[in-house]
Length: 115
Picture 1 (cartoon, one colour):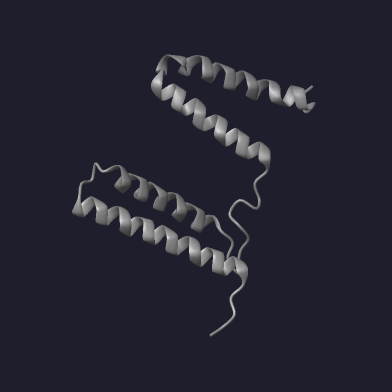
Picture 2 (tube, rainbow, N blue to C red):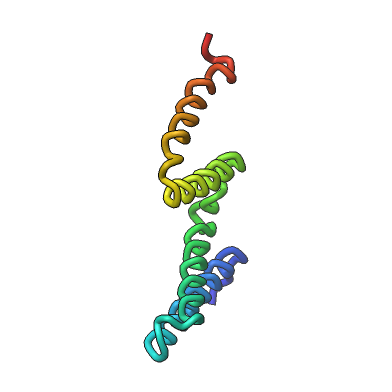
């Protein structure tokens, strides 16, 4: 048996937990009901753990989020929140487009690149 490093072991444990949650959710759905609270919870947990598993580091590459800056993460969160708002209230789409165009026009001026 070979020795495994701590990140490899953690990656394996996350994968096993994701698989266990998925199997549990599917078993509850098949045996009881797809509308059961535990079925949905286990399936959602397995999807989240699967996403964590994909983002974890391996021997050949760093973690998926190793190259992201905090400003990009905040911009992504803001974009998701705004998209959710637009889906619920489509009438705010035009003002958002106008604000985005204004920011794109003003950004070089504020950064000092346009004269």
